[in-house]
Length: 466
Image (cartoon, rainbow, N blue to C red; front, side, top):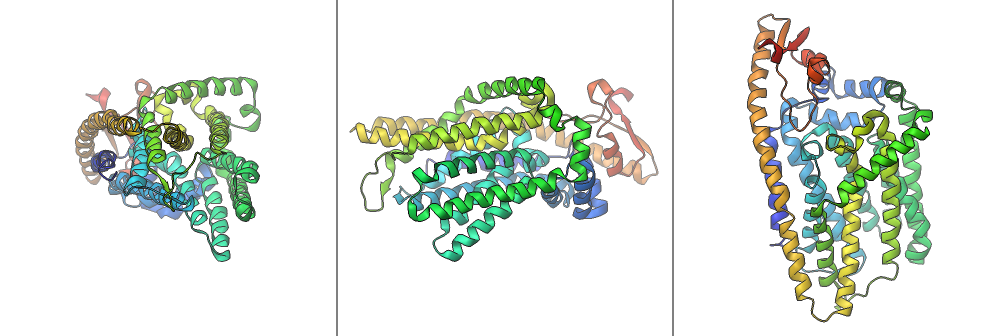
């Protein structure tokens, strides 16, 4: 199993190595001068009072923007390792808590395959993995939500349970001021867990699990209150017309439903996600009880998958509703796929769970499991091929942009040092990222932030000046 984990791990390692070609773009242009001049606290103040109210988001953005361009280059490696480590820890602890033993390396395979599918089986890997601003807002939040499971799974004593509940409250409050969409997913999952706890949680653990879920919901509500009442959030709602009335308008709700249906079709028809089912089937075929006996399919397994699917659909639609005023009809396009990531991790985990149930069923009703194992092994390798090709092409594009970006960066720094106040800027677009002078040169944003970074009064459209 450890050998089978090598293809997804190699893919993640290569993708992290390609991160050395990442250069700032879009919102990054505005974060860099603010953190350089005012520090991380200045960015937190800007987010809270002016931009959107997401103070936790500002802290994480400031953590990488503090290192300027180097922070962008190291971000893919750091975030990739974090995602893998969290999912690996959760897999190991969940299997241990369930009293299951697996071949060595299978938990790592589960984590590696889930990580690769979550990060790279998307229409726009650059915005999911390489663009730090989008990753902080939509890719890392669901992973941090999974990290809150670790104290829950480790809790054995009264003190451990109290710590797990405290972590759930604090993490939920943090996530609510980091990503509204992930906060919605968290609440839907916790509500589903509360509703099912009477049927699926042993009586001895039921009170603790319910308190943990209630703590997570309460923490989310507290964080959401901080966010919604912030001046920055009010400014954002006014700027995009995303007030309660417009969000709940029939036209907006209908358009959001249509957009979410389009997103669902795109995700369901992305064949690489079959890798999550395959690795789940392997788990079901190979796991054993601690006593060495073969586990039976859990009676409540289908109920848990069904509840998770309902939570996924409801939260996915609500995420689309709150994102629609900002993105409009583009919310279902590849350019906006980063806002799908808040619930895509839940989708991949549900596929793994469904695969596990399928594997247990196959094991129970079929004597020969070798063919099923062979098919799953082949799928685990095959699903890495598509992302590998896409990442290679993206590496070429990022490398070309980095060369041009570095040359332009030197030119603008040298011009500013020589006393120039206005200099030309050539657009360097990658993966549909916003650059100054988009829309045929009509849109200046984020040109003002580019000028601030180089201490200029203004930049002009370098493409037109040629």
